[in-house]
Length: 77
Image (cartoon, rainbow, N blue to C red):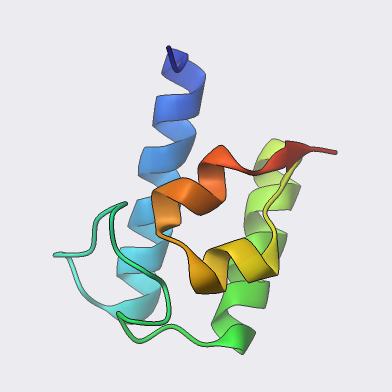
């Protein structure tokens, strides 16, 4: 079971993606590239998340998987 902290971090990350891509319909099931993301935006999101939460998201996972899957496979640094 995911902790409240994990759920909150997921919600924050998805909100950052929504703001970045100016699309409030984005959810965790979406693939970052399919919704208009690109590698430069991914780098910005990954750096922001790592700075804020001390958790590293794989660029490959973010670009190839759903947002939720990328977060599930992230690692604390």
